[in-house]
Image: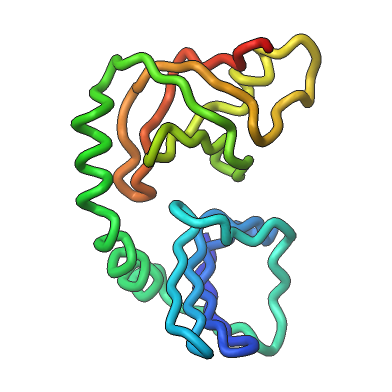
Length: 161
């Protein structure tokens, strides 16, 4: 992975990208007019286009990126621990497709975010390409993603309307 930092229009960006420029994790910090931090595993702020490397971009170390990432994750850790208690491994859950990320499909389950397999969801649809925001998904809790504070789903399917 490649780690970059840049500032543009009073917003600081820290982004983890692959060699093709696909963003996997992102932190933004708006400094004006308000002090607002957003982290892509919680907020809808992941770059959805190929990230271009230009003269504004500085390469940073994985350690520098992780330091900022972990400092922001700490604000959500209590909520994540509650989610793990509320949704133990093996629990059956129903949620709503929130968005599609490179890692898979993010599903909103009450106050928590789960990650579903795009392929398994697509396989459960009548025709390919039918995964979109707002669809209802059923699955079981398989594990927990501590790096992104996500519940991980298994046996996930799109529920037919």
